[in-house]
Image (cartoon, rainbow, N blue to C red; front, side, top):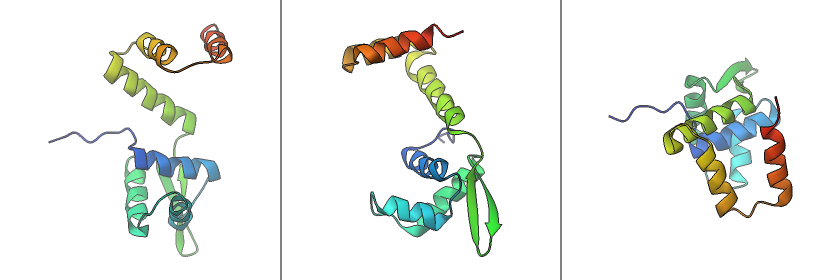
Amino acid sequence: MRRRSSTLTEHELEIMKIVWLHDSSTVRDVYEALLEKRKVAYTTVMTMMKVLETKKYLKKTQADRAYVYRPAQPQRQVIGAMVRDFVNRVFNGSAEPLLAHLVEEHDLSREDLEEIARLRSKP
């Protein structure tokens, strides 16, 4: 049996980006935002938001007849954990091969490289 991942799937991340953008959202809000990009069932969005609540990425409160979902964790914290998980799984915990890959495979501009160097030199 596959262990349940605590990291976000592609569709879960898509939902979280919508909720982070708006600070709070109902299932209907997320459903309508997703419909602008692709076809999706309302019940699928509802189920996925319940899963995100179970995984502790969302918390909900009741407002009138609908639940309002808010992020349980800041976007930066969640994405940081996802990047660490990726680096650990793919590069055995070393970020250097990831950076080398990005430099070699993606035409990074001089500004991009200077920004990386600047970030690296931060205390």
